[in-house]
Length: 294
Image 1: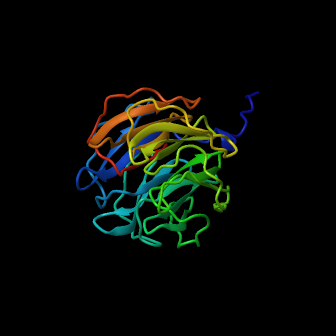
Image 2: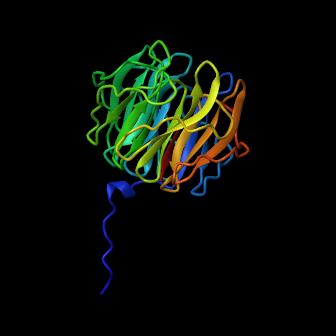
Image 3: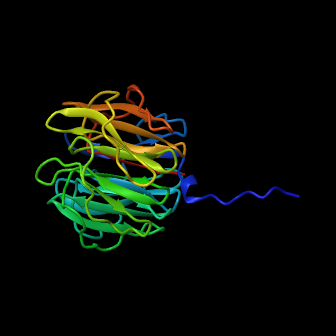
């Protein structure tokens, strides 16, 4: 008899590769950099789609990704789908309120959500399991920009940190149906321009950012969405990195701004431990986004 292989659970979800994309080098750019299942960043892939920065990205459809919204010189809502081979598609016409400095994460195993953003917004837009972005959902929680988001719990999400007129550490949980909860009091250093990704199959991590100075501390997110106090910085303090899951249960922060554009990366183990800097590959930039695929 053949052995019975149990079905994967939500906590087993994850992708093995990642992609950093778009950003700013002094002007908006559109190149991408793939991340292998061993956390190695590849050289630049030529831009597809409109060059822009201050956008967001997340997974959808279990093995695909989407970049969306951003700043091309003006706010936009265009999106670019990422195939399960890491190929970025041309622009899809925007749906929802144009904005930038927003966050995005996946939820419900195979869907995604964009939320918050410029103009101190708390609007959200859901992404279906085939990559279709929905019209605006009325905001819940404190409107803010320069925010980030990550998955946790296998099928849920969390938006955190950002600027509501001043730096904040408040968070908003996202249910496995894509419903955003009211504010949870902030834990850790209030800051904006933070990066975030999942790790360990069902946990998340917020890291780096800006408090008026560049910082490098991290804050772990448990599998029930509880944010922990600051963990001392490892790696170069910087703002505006991208971050994504890779190898199913690990993460990577990459690129950003230290006062100049950088491309170094920091790997995150499946226990949420951040490693020292890895020499950068690809075009140094900030205001980029990242997600996993495959």
